[in-house]
Length: 620
Image (tube, rainbow, N blue to C red; front, side, top):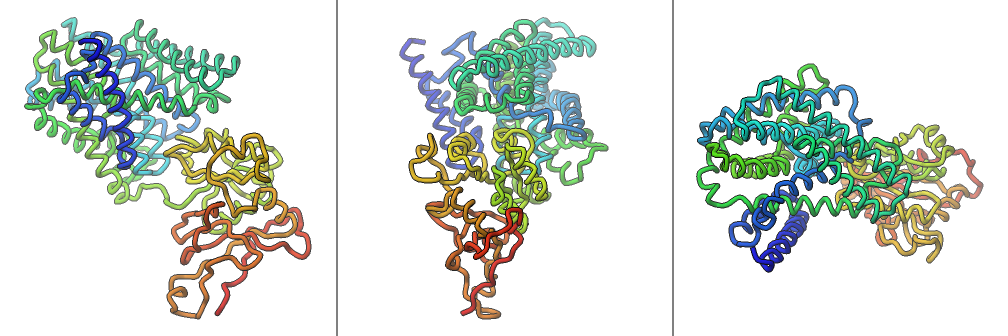
């Protein structure tokens, strides 16, 4: 290719990758649903979107290193302290049973359906045992299953990628050499690769701990240090054992997520942006290498192969893996209906297909297009059906709001008690030991671990947090935490207004949703609470009362004089706060939470007021 073609190809791949992800976000669908057809179309219609031609022999190793970065990022979401007991045993079973069951089923079915040799079918079977966090995670964000089910699926999808990558490299080497691989030899090689990967991952985690904790690298250098260490360790492990770098990347991410004090330093917005870009570029690049001609005789047979994977292989794997486990029939059913294929399947197929075809193995040229069809089909099947299946089985997480209150002042604890009084499962976090004791004494649940780990990413998903309310007495802390915690897919984040306009170092200059009517700052609210103003729970009028049936009751459309509307909670348990821009309308058959007028006599400092009922609705 000429220099102009290379520039055009690289630029177009980047634009298509980002543009597809933006479109997917607007359509509220997983990015892969848009990325794969866009990449395939670009490869078919242009002469420049062909990364295998743009990069030549470097394309395959670059794909492998890019996948290592993606798996490291996935590993950062996997805190081993959250995977214990029965869930851990289930994940382990899903991995080894899934490997031993899916691999031969695919090989036996693919050989006659796709007119492949047994060698090519064996390679395809290895490729298709993997799942992947880049597909499972986005689908689960739409489904919102119970935390235990999500935890199992995310761990399975992340760990089996490394196993599949190593097995793929072993089978590929055996097919290239023309020698048969015995079970003992395969097990020995797999353990050797796993050993190299684990050692490399732990070494990389130690290096990152030294760089981020001891040297205190900032956001830019900290992000580039992570990228360099992940690529360096993955490349080094791959030099020792093929595809051991994938295992090293996952182990490194898990170790960094587990080490105390590192989580706030690694989950930086720029690193997440970088991983998102890598995912988009990889999906577009790999799908662009699939030509329309290669799909001509593959689509129909591969759809039948996918049906076997979805309807036979996956249910059988889950049935065997969950025997004797603490999962009910509905949870097993959902696990059996969630096994999409993703980027690791695409990357391994792209790496091995052409090389085996050049070696003269019959049907090897069909490995990549068949994998492409399986990825598209499984993502469409599970993407379109996962939500109704989860609802039908009754395994979706509760839709009731679960707020996380950050702060432990007395009025914040009273607010937590008010949330509990209206049936909200409330979580609280405070850094000060005295405040934590106050929260515990009130019988409210304290969030474990660090704030950022609990309120963002996988932590927020596993805890079921829907909104974070930053209610500390430190304006700058609230403002900075709101900026760090806010993500596109995370919980809603609200903060208190600064004490007075322009006060604080950073608070006046950061955007974000600000709680409560103008003038009701945290300091003002705390002062009124100390003076006897109670945080009260008051019922909203029922629909029958609003429509005129029953007693004549005037709907409460705004607080009575002296009362401030803080929150509303509708009959379904959805929490809506008053912000400095607007106040929510009182919901029918729900509740409102208000701050009452100052009492004529001071309230006792230790008196709780959340359970105190408000005045009855006014009659006309």
